[in-house]
Amino acid sequence: MNVQRFGADPTGQRDSADAFDTAIAFAKAWHREVYLPPGTYQVNRHILVDNVTIEGAGSWYTIVKGHQVTLSTPLPDGSVHTGVGFYGKYVADGGSSNVHLSGFAIEGDVRERIDSDQVNGIGGSLSHSTIEGLYIHHTKVGMWFDGPMSNLRVRNNVIADQIADGINFHTGVTNSVVANNFVRNTGDDALAMWSDKIEDANNTFDHNTVQTPVLANGIALYGGTDNTISNNLVADPIREGSGLQVGSRFGAQPFTGSLWITNNTTVRSGPFELNWNIGLGAIWIYALEGSINVDLEVVGNSFLDNTYNAIMLVSDFPVKDLYTITNVHFKDDRVDGTGTSVVSARVAGSASFENVEARNVGAVGVNNCGSFHFTPAGSEFTLVDLGGNVGGGTTGPWLAPWELPNTITCDDRPPVVPPPPPSPWVTP
Image 1 (tube, rainbow, N blue to C red):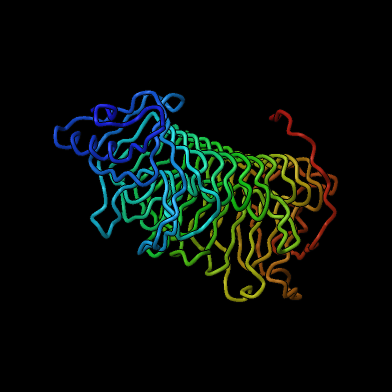
Image 2: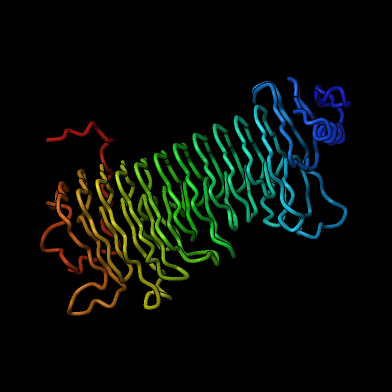
């Protein structure tokens, strides 16, 4: 079903939202697909999608573009604006399924972040669905999914210049995949799983590229069960976030089961945290609202050209005696260049390290503050050496024998040594 046959204007001069709705209704009745030919289509509100396939001529050629519209009265969900977006039905209305969107661009007009506004490129609940080959620009969140929902595939999309997140799995998203997407210049987490009220489970973020999240993290997980973060590249988080974060935050359900963080690469991560006045890690494990004791496997990752630390495990000071981080296993990871340490531990608990190779380390290899009690027995955080941990910097081996099992080596603000650019690894 060609939307132009139902009155859609490819010049963008007239609003085509009603024509889109009519084409979708006919396509569902006749079990056909909706086709968006080349052109720019003005759409200034949500297009509701359920059990439908919508395909454009490619994101360079088919553009769905909308204005920000101020509503005369706020909607029940708190929205005071609307704008262009393709939305599944919310779970309270039965949710949507069998939706397939591909081959077009969504060009928004969001001018400020209002968290209650539903002005995202893709939204609602979409089970057993696919989203491929979209370009999403200037919306609040590129794709924000409100579950429970299952079996969503998000592949080969480009998301740029968002006011908030790039993609967020919010509340009970399960058995879903985000793969081969490019996300740049987000105002919040580029990719996130947020187990708000209901856990996200059995999801995978794989082979995505994230560049310059302006605020917050490249990839963040807040609670959940048996999720995987693999083969992603994250570069240049700017402030108040890391390349990768595992956090008990934002009222999320606890981490349970296992969490795999494997074969990812971070570049120039671990920026300065302006609230704490310390450097973060390229991977940041944060026990803020509860202990983290999930089986956390951090395997085969490369943390390159880290501004401060490569690895940070931390709890906030007001809750430092309440929460711990345990059952974390680093294996076969490589660290090339740190402004400060390989590991900064500012929490009680433990982690194991096996075959973790580091070079060009700017300060002492381990900055082990524990939970800041500085007891005669040593730090409350224990580093377990399982062997094969080699390399270091000017201070010698990064995981020095004298630092084990829990020697206090806390230096709150060591001088930052700019790391050299990464160079090829030479395996003996």
